Structure formats: C-alpha cells, structure tokens
Amino acid sequence: MADRKVVVVGAGPAGLRAAETLARGGVRPVLIDEAARAGGQIYRQPPPGAMRPAAALYGFEARKAVAVHAILTSLKEAIDYRPQTVVWNVFERHLDTLGPSGRSGLDFDRLVIASGAMDRALPFAGWTLPGVFTLGGAQIALKAQGVSIGRRVALVGAGPLLPLVTYQYAKAGAEIAAVLDATPFSAKLRNVSGLLAEPGTLAKGVWYLLRNAISGVTAGSGVRAIHVEGQDRVSGLRWRGCGGPRASRRLRRGWRIVRTAQRDPTGGPRRLRLRVRCHRTAMDSTTRRRGPFKRASSLSGGGRRRDWWRRRRRTAGRTGGTSRARGPR
Image 1 (cartoon, rainbow, N blue to C red):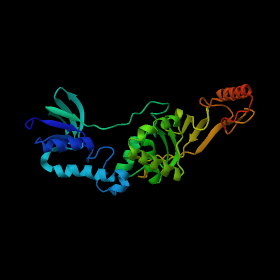
Image 2: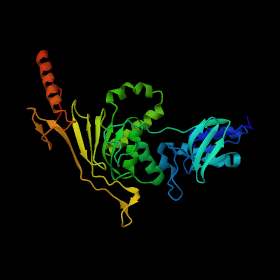
Image 3: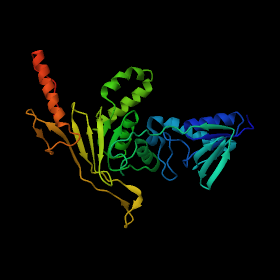
Image 4: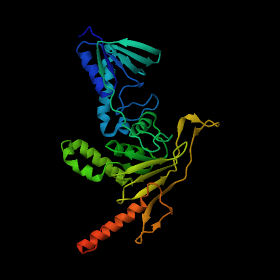
C-alpha cells in the first residue's frame, strides 16, 4: 500500500491519528484541513499572536490537546500537510479543492474522511436573523479569536455542549441573560444510569453545572416554542416552559453584538444597543392576567392556563381534598 496515494480530510484528533498511523506504516498521506492550524473543533488552536495557556483554552482536556497538537510536529516531512484548504467536491477518485493558491484537483487511491462533528441546528422562528449563532460558532469565536459574540448572551440548545459553552462564556466575562435547555429534566434523569458507565464524563458534566450554578447561572429544562423576535436583527426572545405547565416568557435583550467584519465610519466595531426587559406572563388566583402585558401573545397560552386551573379544581373535588399543585405564577 506504500505506493498508493492516501488522502486524509480533516486535521482534528481522528485525522491526525489516521495520518500518524499511515506514516508509521510507510505511507506518506496527504492531510487536508480548512483551518490554518491543526486541532479540529474541540482542540482548535488560536492564530499566532493570540495564544493562551492550554489550561485556559481547553480546561479538563488540556493534556489531550497538547498531545494532539504534538502529532503534527512529530510527523514533519512524513506527510504532505495542506492547511487552509477546503475540499468542495469528490467524484470517483478525484478531489476538487480550494486553497491559498486557488482551485486545484487531487487524485487518490484511498480516502479517509475525518471531518468531525458539526452543529445540528433545527429551524425555529427567527433562526436566520443576524445575531443568532450556533453554539459551535460561538465557541469558535471564543477559542480562536478570544472574543464573545456579545456582551449579553442567551444560550439555547440541548446536550452536553450547552453547559460547557455557558461556563466558557461566563468565565470570559459575558453576561448570561438566559440558558434554555430543550431537554426535559425527566429525560435527563432517565439517562443517568447510562452515564454511570462513563464516570469521568459524568463528573465533568456535574462540575460544569455546579460551577454555573455558583456563578448564578441556571438552565431551564423542557423549553419549547422558541421564537426569536426582530425584523432586520435580533431584538428579543420568547419561549414556553420552565416554571409551569403553560408558562410563557419573553426576553428583551440588551446585547452589544460586535461584528468585526463591519465597522462604523469612525473605525470602531459596529455595535447594536438594545434595551433589556424580561418577564413572565402570569395568572393570579382569580385567573386575571397580571404583568406588563394586558393581552396574551401568540405563545402566552392564557386560555390554556384557565383550562389547567379548572382541571386541577375538578381533580381536587373528585378526590375530596385540596390540590397542592401550584399553577403558573
């Protein structure tokens, strides 16, 4: 196989290990990566001049990150490394690439694709507005450029990346306006037994959650009906869940969204200033609405709230006692 041309796409942990294994077997692979420096997403390296200590960048993964970065240095001339190159087409045994020197092609006998993970963003109302980022994109800005996507940030999602990015942004000094987890808390409890097989992973997750709680940042679970408000840019966020069977919340964000690619005439970064307003639409004991809004929004569910109270009263009457369940406040 030493006379065959092997191409590895992706210089993250998997791609680097694949290139290392091939080099040890006598094959000189071509290693292609779109980033300027190897490491992938989880072990992404900042550009020259913006380096920080590994512990500050990667936390618990600092030792692994250093080991992964050392692979490329140890390989030296044993591989053909092509950074800042994008593979945009594969046809039969030919790659079409776009790199620093422009478009080019590359034939191969064997192809290893180690493109890594990417955000799976599910569409929701307002998700295409300027000011909405994926969690991975927000993490790239913090790791690579050392900047946050804004001074005031709301984080929405599901899975282990949510508490991690929340911790990283809070540590960087960003004000966390809200953390909304789409996974119901009951679903998390049902999967705790499976996490016991990976005690290290479980311990890290609990540590991040506790650190966020100590910082005053807690996540709401079971969030649904997410709606980003705004016309030509983000102006607010609405959601349902977190705090009652029909609770509805709205957040008016006071974020400064710094867009480094667009600058104002004075030469400084363009900043968008918005006022902050956060509240819950609520019901009192006589089912009258209280709060800043007199009329229900499309997500407030006022009629459904009254139905919920009626069902609770009927249930209490049938059982001959008083229901202690709390309705939405």
